[in-house]
Image 1: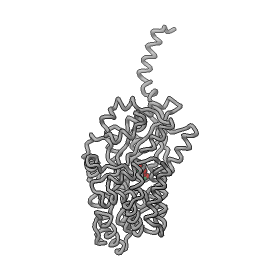
Image 2: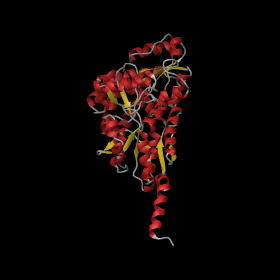
Image 3: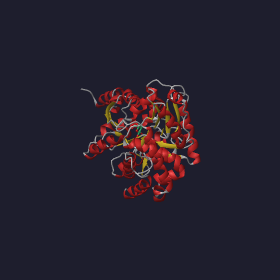
Image 4: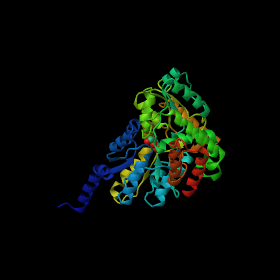
Length: 419
Ligand code: GAL
């Protein structure tokens, strides 16, 4: 019979040989809506990195750009007591989920990995609930971009528009030359993405913030907002009749294949150009959305982490959180996704000109007051106010006889009832 000493030795030996791998491996179920070409490539990087650490990845993808469907499915799962390990949740939604008591703290990982010092404070604010990290940022997307096909512009005798007024001049030339001027998908979040770009030009950063962050009634219903709606309405003249319901990546492919000249969309669109093997500056142009040079509408993708009943997967959850902010992941993921790394201490030598411009503007706009959160992507206000804005914007855009003055008034009233 073995004495206790021997038993102890064997157990110690066994645990040093076997336990580290067995004890740490677990499963992460991750909800996201990254199903388009560039998006799918990006999320696959995270899956691979988790599998390399011995964990298994249960993919919980819910298609639909902007994530509205994903959020609906997430609510059902969470309410039935079966949330995933992590879910793509952004901006104010993180606070809403935190207030409901669903999220877990990541503070031990955050301390070890020094998140407070590697991340800009504009980002950490969004990731913390009552002072605790409950979410991890993945990237920084710039939303106010214009993507253009240089061949179509040239054939139309058009140039890259530098203001909304110039946009109408150039779009008219493109339309006359027989091309679709603006590739667009008629879905509420895409309508809102164009609307906020027009608002950024017309209102300027200060009033943009007053309208969509402070929800200031005077700005929401004021004469400049009427001008935003007036210009937004004119944009409709330059999209094609097949746009209703079209997915954003299908619209991007119309610019890639030369059917359309331009698209106003966040830089996840660049992920599509990259996945198609296209090079910026040669095959396509990235430029600030008309009239928004020096301004930066930010959209930070992040994963919020749920409090799991099953503790055996907690280590896998922590490894997922840690992996997301490693330099390796930040580089490969963002090269595929079209965004820039959320860490400011990264070597950017592998990134293209669009990403370098984005990084430079991200930094300069933070100083000049031109760094503003995206309303369309849930960074500027609650999901309630955002939903109210979406409704007014989409109904207006799809109604030929809608009146801009009435729309501004409706906008203010809708936001007020959602406050
Ligand atoms: C945004 C998201 C981006 C991109 C886009 C289209 O809301 O932040 O990462 O995926 O939707 O799906």
